[in-house]
Length: 101
Figure 1 (cartoon, one colour):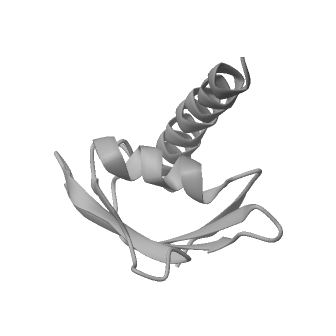
Figure 2 (cartoon, helix red, strand yellow):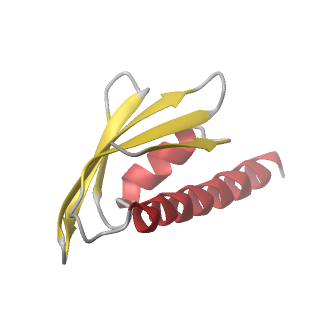
């Protein structure tokens, strides 16, 4: 299964993504241990499922696509994950700046 690692990811960012199900419009759930979770949903081409694991010490998020339709490029899914992470990073940074002000 295709995998990718994203850098500079925090639990705060994952919680922001999960709060609005912002991983390509998929249901995004964090496990109780707050170190792993799943993203799942449907596209016009079929079902997609992914599993992720957060290494909080290294601030890395490893994502593995478990299931995707054959005609849906993995690069499209990676770009959607990246977009959601970038948006959450910007929100997290803004929230920290506001709290520090």
